[in-house]
Every structure is written in structure tokens, then in C-alpha cells.
Length: 237
Image (tube, rainbow, N blue to C red; front, side, top):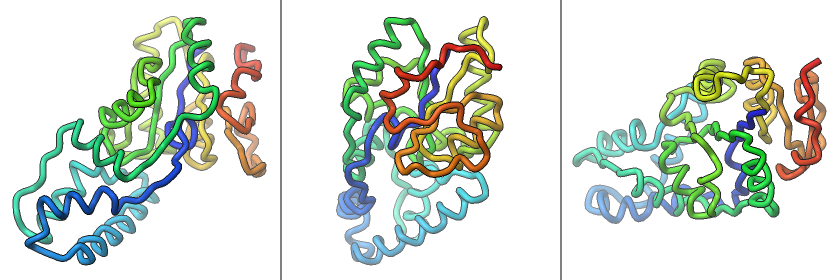
């Protein structure tokens, strides 16, 4: 068995998300003499709309690769470069997160059972920054690899994003097939449909009791730790 997890609202709960908390220090350091904060804040909101339009088409809008150069193009100055550590710091300013209760105990259990675990996340931030986020909460060590759409350029439910991860997983675990994999996520459109279309069984964290209109979820749970109660070791029928 192999477990592939979504990240936000699956492994970690987003307590607060405010992009402007990251943007303001960036403005103070690089753009304070070029524009007001209200101006760059408004532009950031325009770029958010741009990002959502790209997501509808299946593409990501990576923060470091694509968004930062657009600030430089609009307001002048050099394109800001960010190390993974600086990107993680920006991410932390924008997002206050916590791991779900019981998560570490669950991950400990799967680690002792020698079950390989991975993370496949839609995020504008690179995988290295996401790994540092998880490291702050003491859970990065459980995952063999983290993939972010910021690095790949496309978002779930894009088949190519899932396929890339599946190919790498099978390469690392040559005795396993898609039938051995479960994808665990909270968003039906991106996680459950995407996993189903890739031929992977899906566990849906369905907190709102929404209908599984397509019947794609193998199991439905309320919290990620309830995976322990799912008979996920049973063979595909």
C-alpha cells in the first residue's frame, strides 16, 4: 500500500490565510519608493484573479517564477529572487497553519508499517517551501517526496500532474502498481476526480457531507486520521 496526500486542509489546517501579510514586507523592502502599498495590494488582487483563471485552464501561477517578475515589470527594479528559505518565510507570513489532531500518531503508525507516503499539492509555492512548512510542524520526515504544482506548472486534477507522481512512485517502489495506491484529499474536483481519472483509489475527506455525484470516492471520512479505520489494505474488486 502507498498513500499520497493532499496538503492544505488534508494534512494541515489553514487557520488564517492573508496574502497581504507576506506582500507588505516585500513592498517595504523592494517597492516602497516605487508605489504605495494600496497600489501593490490592488495589483496583487488582480494577479489573484489571473491565477484563478489559469487554474481553470489547468495551469499553475508559481509565485517565484511567474508572479514576482510581474511586480518588477509593473513597478520597475530588478526581479526579486527568493531562496527556498525566503519563499517558506513568505508562505508562513501568509498562512497560519496547524497539523490536525492525531496526525503525528497516524503517520507514526504508517511509518512503522513501512507504508510509503507522499504529498501532491496544488500550491503556488515550490515543494521545498512546502517541505519547510511541514518541517516546522515535525511531519516532513514521514514523506518520501513532496510535489508542488508550482514546480510542475499544472494543477490537479490535471492528469499529467498525477501521472508524473505515479511514475516516480512506481520507479521507487517497483513491486507496486496503481492498485496499491490511495490518494487522500478534501477537494472533490481536484483530488477525488483527479485521482479517479488516474486510476487511483481515492479517500475523500468530506467534512460537509456533500454527495459523491460520480461515485468516485472509495471511502469517505471526516478527518484524515480516520484513514486508520478504512479497510484500505483490501484488494481492488
